[in-house]
Image (cartoon, rainbow, N blue to C red; front, side):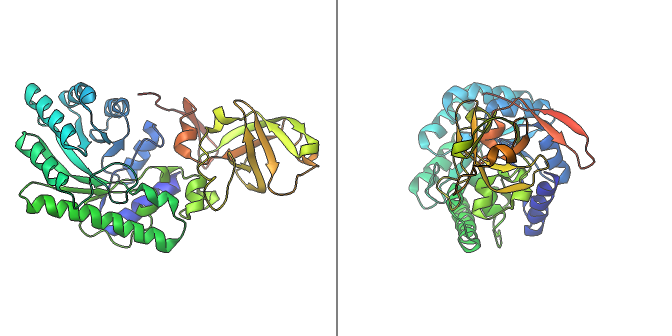
Length: 359
């Protein structure tokens, strides 16, 4: 984990941009503290509960990177009234109007960033759309603080070559910079140009016009990121410890006590170049056991098998009681199954780090 943090921060420093990690991956204060110690400035969150917890733990500069709706504005207001430098986002005139009306009603000038759609993946306003300036006008004239623009190239998760990733990183950068230029040309402030995903952050050749980058899963990495090509399996910092509890030798199965409740139902590698099932099987010291994956899962039972031909000697290879580690498809989803991490230092010391749950 520390190596992953150092790698990303060094890259952002070399590209000359601030780095605002997305803490939804870990939802863990010691992890975020390690990111800040390496040079991160501010954090990104996916829930207002995260914002409240991290603010209580000493993080003041927080971007809530999910489109704001009116029902959540009282929570956002309460945090700002406590002193939290909370930024919120919108990608519609309706949402901008609700934010401005609520802010005026309560005497609060919310800092709002406009979400840009740079790849057709999910949310946001396309950089050339008229709606971009309508939202900017609604916020600015409504008395809110128009902080900037932000985007997330989520479709980078569908790529797997350095060339395609670099092209997507440039597409993400160019779209967000164009949006910022249009907002400024219309006479509105736009100080922040925020982009980011783990694949594009690690693939961008240059970030001219960008002020900050956001990325999250890089801190642990996972098998999806491995398939994309931005990490090796040895970079994956998160694993689930499991024990062999039985066998179906004629099928070449070992049964373990880690099902989809342990690994999550995320099968993100299923549509990629290598399907790892529910996870890659490793020894307890995280050495990959080539060809062995968690090929199936029930709620509390996992099926460990070899890809291709069945291993009919699996009961001898993995006797009952054998402990193994499983690398996850999606670190965020697997982490969400647990209340805490067991963090192992290089010198073998073990610590327990609590993890935030819920909304």
